[in-house]
Image 1 (cartoon, helix red, strand yellow):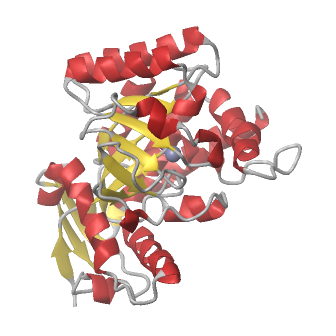
Image 2 (cartoon, rainbow, N blue to C red; image 1 turned 90 degrees about the horizontal axis):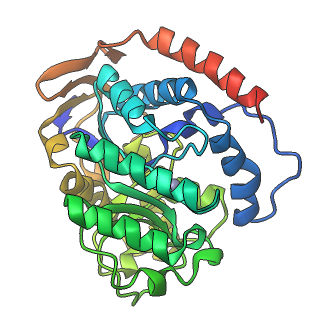
Image 3 (cartoon, rainbow, N blue to C red; image 1 turned 45 degrees about the vertical axis):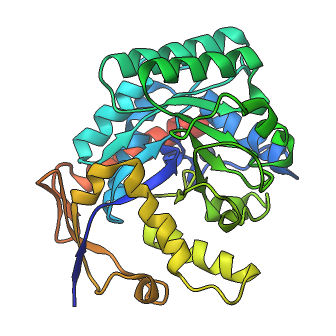
Length: 340
Ligand SMILES: [Zn+2]
């Protein structure tokens, strides 16, 4: 029995991390979240060039489509390849046939000039008509001036801000620093250590697999008054799997809860990218509802239409050659890993 739904939305992704698979272990084993950032992700993003970014986005978009995800809210950083990076990501997603809402995560980690160039990339991309948001890495890596500049640019352009908030304990004062800047169209990724009464408007982006992997704790997003949407934080874009994990994690602290709350988080994705709801995904199993999906492994899309165009048929991508994408991505991953 098959079923048809709208296209799913991954509300927090890092397409560049598609090339991380198989990377060499860092010189020292990280012992906490800050060290994971310093020894893994901040070394990886600094080594990216535009060709690597292109093939990581192609692979990430392909894998999204193969999971029935037709819209990706991406958060990108490549401090040594900033200019034009958002165009490369948008073009790769368009080639595969997946919608993307792009943002460049600005940071002062590489000095104020790095933040300025990141902000300029957001502005250039958005003013040229790109679908996106203004990105900020996180409050704890930005000066107040950079936070204010990003918030101001977003308000000027009529878009929201996509930012990591309180993912680890090192960002604990984010709610104080962002108060007065955040607006309802902001996307607040993680919020693990955000106080329940935090006073920030915006949608909380819950990333259960990433939070478990980084051992940062459980965000327990049901405690917030904010809307909640689901993301992967760069570990693929399989949103049915992400829903299942969000459900059982919630269940781990409240055995009385059913899958309906986590399902509503999945559906919040359609508030962020409404056009994805009109995409059509034909699934290998039906019905697609919280009680069925929570207990049915291996559901996969057979056919996907985005904006009326068939982009996956018989489980196979139609706009690109999936084997070629995987081959090129592996070549670029080898180049990337050699730089680490
Ligand atoms: Zn993230």
